[in-house]
Figure 1 (cartoon, rainbow, N blue to C red):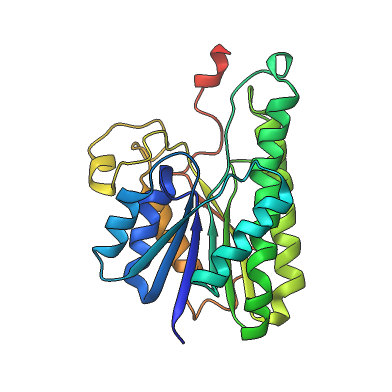
Figure 2 (tube, rainbow, N blue to C red):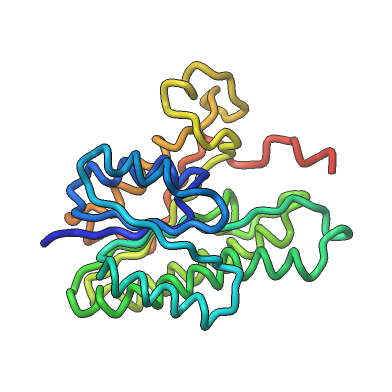
Length: 251
């Protein structure tokens, strides 16, 4: 079967490095979404592997029916997709006293609602095919509602996202669709490859920062065709970190 993957939010951040690596895993087509940043660099990197690529501009904070229509149009044009890597997920660091309703909307619509809409769009074709792979991104400690100063809305949204993903994994297991969560560590330099990260001192217990290649390793593992028995999993890719590194203490 010719595989096709949708990677959301791949014009920048970790997904911009992950999407071209997925193109080397036998996918016939890699589609990405973007909002404000140009997707050209990511598309060029994907096409350099010999894989076809396309991009659709979608604002996942827009009105939900508009998002659903845009996703349906993308799927009609470039799908159906047997794999979804949902990397959209805005991030805000503020103490609760400084947060407002706009921050709440950005965190929950951007992280939770966006996942629900993207998943709802791709699932019908996956069910029909009896095969699908979905990967979403969690946050350190969100699976156990671990608190971090300055992350009340973000951490709450990621906890909700993980609950959704693991429940969906149960519901879709008989459909041949796996749903898993990757938890990146504190990777503030999203463009670092592994060699550059190894040459840099980091705060994680392993002594270096993470890289997009480290996260891509986990994603590629989870979306492999043979990985049908692994679903509802939470895979930490954190360099051994189990708590925030202290930079939020100054908030």
